[in-house]
Image 1 (spheres, rainbow, N blue to C red):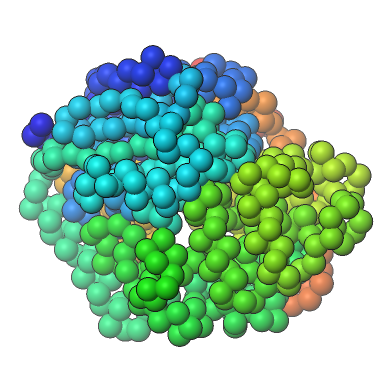
Image 2 (tube, rainbow, N blue to C red):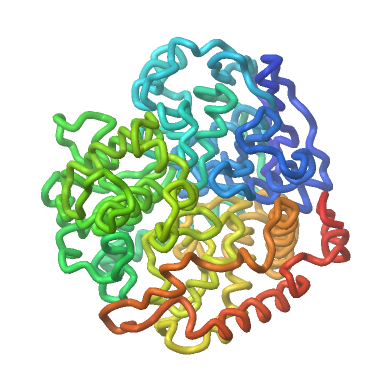
Length: 603
């Protein structure tokens, strides 16, 4: 079925009732679209509006949303991603996580802004959206297969142009940090949306579409898109190494600023950081640059042409994976890190949380808190534990609950070595090495995430972080805008905020200023916070875990630092943060602001 997506919007969602095996198109009101921009904002609106407070994330009543934004389907470089939005089984709060590839384009070209899943099937199913028809079909034959085998099998019938998102055994077994996977290696990594799919018996989603795109101002869109591409090409000529190694160039930098997680965050400086730099991966495996989505001029993904590794085992890991499955486990063996990454992708596990859980298990073992014997630096440990977690075998069943849940099961002082923010294992940037990072993790709307950390400083937490707060708040507001438009985080600096606004206006025909969009980003942040408050979050939860509050860095330029210069400073930072957000002293958005924004809760 041919058709048009007008001004960045299909103006409809596909509501999929998995229990009834039905899929129906439903109009999205114009005023809702205009207020919430798209993707994150729009998904947060529907989640807050339709999900009852206190819903078990793994119950049929939870809602799962696959959302595109205004940029998808437009030809803008680095904009093929999709937002996955739900209530997290890992944290119990709002979750938005972003998956690469071209699935975002596919949803828009299929004629939808969102796919909204409700209910649960009684046996495994897949959603098939192709040729203008959406059907819920049996997928019993796929249950138990890896994401790699599932995608291969589905593309045999759907064709090479179809986009496939699936879960592996991790999601099927309700591992609380299971991830949906597309294109063998791109993940909606954080927070366990793969477990939500598993609880609904939703094995896979297949999407293909042929809707064309009609921007409001085509020439302006083309001009701004070409200008953004030109900027990247100019930086490439200047020798920008990110355009060669992507995030994998970060280990040595992170170690130099005391932020590289080492042996379960016991320190921030790994003496073998140079061995896990992207340059070494490229040299060892014969890698060159490629793109995870199309079109993307950045092409920061590293891929080997080693036939022995195969189509699903060809990717250079990103920095977060290299660090959490490498230095965090005391491992500098690049082959081991590649294999651990491949195994996580095949089984459908978040590499950040998996590395955090394994590091936690090793430290608990060495402190005599669990019977199993594990050691840092032993590559057999991740080989064993990744499989054990995905299949919930032995101690893997405990670790599959995430480090916060695992510490509750193990008991004793194990909570001290469980590194997380609101239950989300924190990423590969130790907050003790950067002033204000602890506050960014503490206030992140999905928990401790580096994707909610948008400000610049070279200072360490050995002084007050209060002066950082205004830039952090403003940065978080802009990130809500970016994630509603959906532009890859790596493209943001090359594109620039002003051009992002111009692209949005060219697509939609609106005449918004940057301040207009920042106000919408602020409202989105209020909405996700109101959702989290409804789920029980308050000031007491806006913190980081024991290690990063109490265990100082043992060496480096930030030697002696924890995440805040003092407990008084942490409280002062929260006071200032709440003030700038317009929240009350306990971190609750005020009803007047929520009513003014059109938020469906908390007003």
